[in-house]
Length: 468
Image (tube, rainbow, N blue to C red; front, side, top):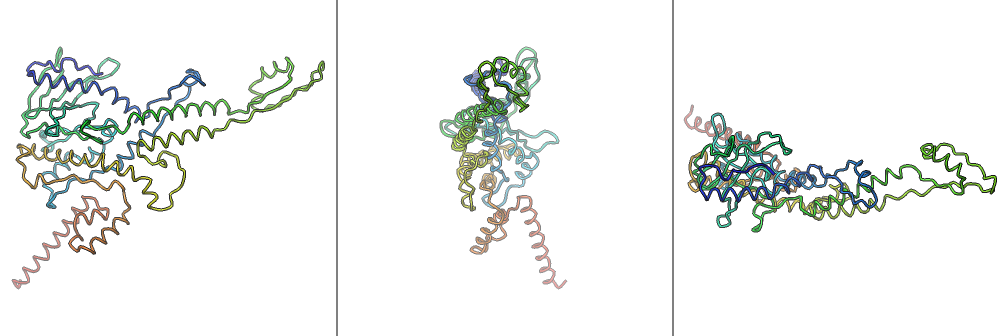
């Protein structure tokens, strides 16, 4: 837990503001430990929990094990959620928005932040006016480990938000503590700074947008959980722990039975003592000479145990992989387990269909609305006006994502060609070039080239009519 005592008691806060801050700080602290645990699973920092039945804790501590399945569940979605910029209902994206997206590196920031959204269930984007030398509007993303918000169910948006924008090092075991906190309200942004003895209000920045300058991007949101749900669910964590325990058992068996286990019957005390004193030599296959007991005439009999099979371990790992695949929608083949090799493009797609649908419905679809609201806030900040005062063309923008099914360029081009044959007006449009795999930057260059050629053609006609 971070030390944020006194934030809600800073001088100058109203009672309502104190109440909102207390709510958000409680909510943030409530989820902080769980979000940190989920990040540990993603980073592979979770070790095997020894049950103490077949192995002692001292023995188990010698094995350094990890599981990359939670990371795979996150990255499989992240790689298929590619934000490609904004499009407009009238075909023309406002130049102001294009400049903000480019200058504030919004696309790159989204791609880097979506990992936190998938791990914690939500990220928060904040918008602020740029200072000298910065874009007219600046967008920053914060993990749920550094920000939180209250939800306005009636307006279906953030009621108030909080983000830790700066940390400072401390001598505590946590290593750092919040230094600057921004409190986002409908009509202002309150900047709270840690003073020598208490938190103080550094400044109140007016907000004309008509809503808090914070927008959540939530994975799989619902009415009950508007801030989304983590990909690293309770079942994902439980299955990962079971897989780590099975790894521990497998490694222990491999270590204990890596050498052939022999046995000796009817050995004399002297022979048993000699073998015990040269145990390593006996295990490594050194020559062993055993003589008959002269008093009894019994000859010692040497044998070896059958090596234990690893098949039960491998079968259980496959079962766990199946459980993980069912919970996370990650295909078994991406978890390192394969039963049958798909023989056709349709069969290959079928193995990924659940994952593609999860990305489209639980990630891209809600993020489209969130990214649209971020764009509206950016244009409102740049124009120093309310979102409701934006023009229809400005409000008509939409966030565009590439197809999460990641179809081949050949199949997309074939579909585009067939559409162009059915509708001649479709050929040469932005969507036509998108289906050919062209990025927005290339499409912009193609359109500029077409405009230059069209302008040159019109000029030639004018000069020809004027006989010049």
